[in-house]
Length: 329
Image (cartoon, rainbow, N blue to C red; front, side, top):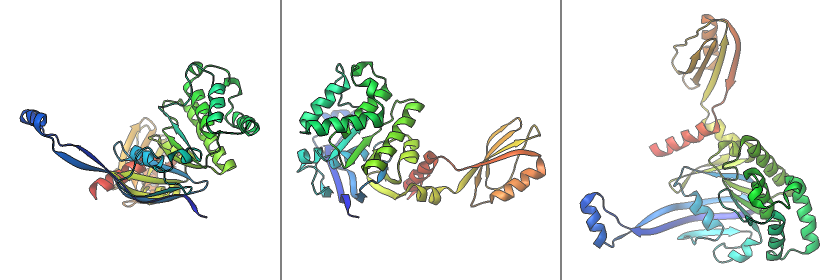
């Protein structure tokens, strides 16, 4: 299968004014015009294939937004190559707009005082969609995203979750091959987030659209994406399937004991107590220091157990470990 997005040794540098600290530095800044280069992105290389669901994650300032701006043609890279469906984004930005869709959680393409149906009709004109094709496509998307009752209500009257569903429909009317999603669930309640994630999975499965998603909500990554690319200080520090990421970095387990005794205390190497309440004990187990069965055997010596639960750490914890390892490298 040929990749639909190819990024090769992509870099981006910005030239900024040199500034100096302290009081003397304040005066010096008034008369100094020294410049310095900051490398925001350093030699990124990766491929995306049709239908892939990829999370592109990193801490604030890692370079995610800069990368997306280059992928969508807003910024010109300092070095490297981008090929998206045979097009170079900064050279073929208008043509690329017909082949990709974008959804940004904090920005909108819907007209605030008009109903979504008006925006959809305008977009059909902009993308030069045949009227029959538009009606059929809109009907399909209205059904998938369950927005029939929202079509003729002004956008300003919609909840954030309802608005996001309409944003997704607007971004998909022209049948893009790749959908870029920047924080698509930001600000949504739990139920709305679950709906959006379900819609995205259904969309990818039924239509083969590739998803390229950035999010600080790790549940978006776990429930939507198959692959995760982790960025830190402008460099890729990890690129694998979500399953392999967990397997590689989940060296710990969370054990919850429910006991008949009021109190349980475990003092073993590799054990970190997280909560010790009445009839309830939660600990983190370092599997490289001690096996789980040894912990359970020790607990059985000290108390009668009513229940034992073993859980993996959250995806958030896994990514935190990745960042920590990267900062120490």
